Length: 385
Figure 1 (cartoon, one colour):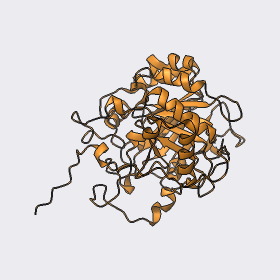
Figure 2 (cartoon, helix red, strand yellow):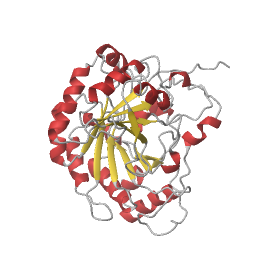
Figure 3 (cartoon, rainbow, N blue to C red):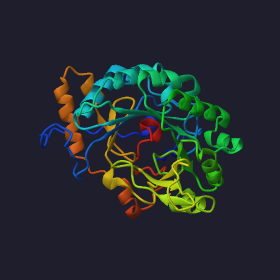
Figure 4 (cartoon, one colour):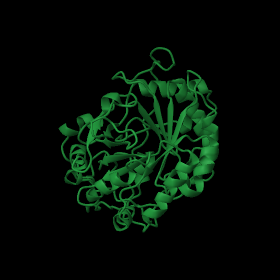
């Protein structure tokens, strides 16, 4: 019997394990904002992927050798409609969610995305305040969409930008997209009032680490918060290696050779970024110069405070960025079951959550990304970052 070799071009959708059944155990306690998981973590943040498509082919997310011209994206009928997304979001809010982030793929590729933003902007948190609605984008379509998104009720955007050097940036996005167009999108977002804007730079040792100081110099004093993200072992297609990770401690040490920095307090519980402010001559935070952040999900896990759930574009609920299985909420939404049953299902799923992959990573053996017996983590392009 011959063994079929592993095919690197296998579709990610085929790599995804089957959904876990929605648990049927009784809900513990009241269905309100006090619901917690097995580690006592509340539910406050919902990240919603609205498309599995992207017009970039960044090697750490959607490498071209996997996501090629023959890649089969999800059919339109598999995607949650805007009304279905809003209905699900309403149940999450009943359990304490205060912030919704729209992601992808590239969310601005979803046709009429501003219609979804307008629907979500009508929802209110348990205490009657507007939701914090934000969106993560590669910036390629932001210049033409920024004002419509603001008018629909979007409050903030986060833009992914991995360098200012055009050659480096084009190498990382792998579709020859210029930096200037992303910067134009950021300027349009600022002009529309979508702020404070955050810019995320994934740092990959040996590829773009030399862009750290130029990026900091460019955004310093602009009112934009620049954040450096450790290259993560998300999914199974990006060929992740630990020796390509530049620890956040090294990023801060490098920045301090050019700018004095002072550590800042977290802005909110469960915040993923460690904040650093540019310091003045007296060593105090110079608010005019602004701040930077580092996200250290490889070297300094923040699982203990993680209050985020993730909803895929086809309605799979994931409890961790590094999850291997999700729960099928689409089947519930498209059944004749009432909202109460959907709410109870989400509550049961959250109350059974014990995910803490980053905390456990150090104790795990190094596994080949293409190992046949290795559970495949969900791809970042499927559930967003």
